[in-house]
Image (cartoon, rainbow, N blue to C red; front, side, top):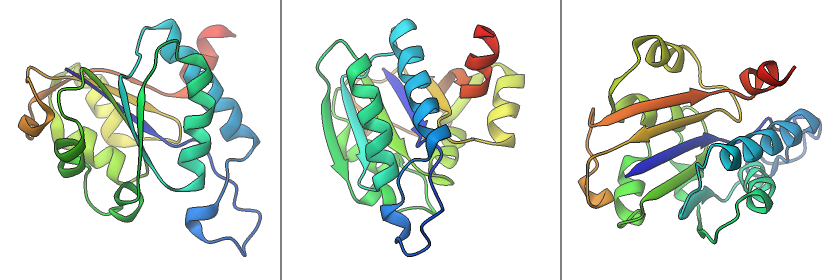
Length: 174
C-alpha cells in the first residue's frame, strides 16, 4: 500500500483579518500546487482516496490536483487534519484509510512531517535526512507499506520511496 503525504501549497498572509483556517493560497502556492499535480500524474502517483484538511489552503491545493488526476478518487474533508497540528496523522489514517491502495493526505506542518518521520523505517539515508531537515510547502513524501489495511499502520514500518519538493521539479525542467 502507498501513502502520499502532501503539505498544502504556500498560503497568503496579506489579509491579517482572516483566521488561520481561512487563509488562501498565494500566487507561488497556486503555481506549486499545479506543478505537483502534473508531477503526480506524470509519475503515476494517483490516489484512490484523499483525506484533506478543511482549511482553505488545503482545499485550494486539492482543487488544483483534481483536474490532473485521470481516475476517480474518493475525497474526505476532515477537520481533525487541521485541528491536530501538534501530532502526527497516523490515528486518522488508521481510522479513514481502510483498504485503499493509494492514500493521499493533504495537511499541515508539523503534522505532515511528523507523520512521515514516524512511519519511515527504511529508505535512502540522504532522502530521510532531507525530509528530517525540512518539509516545505507543496512537498510530497511517498511511502510504501507491506500491510493489507491502514488500521495496521505502525511506526517505522514504511519505506520512504521518495521525497519531492516543487523547486526540485522546477529545476529539472529548467
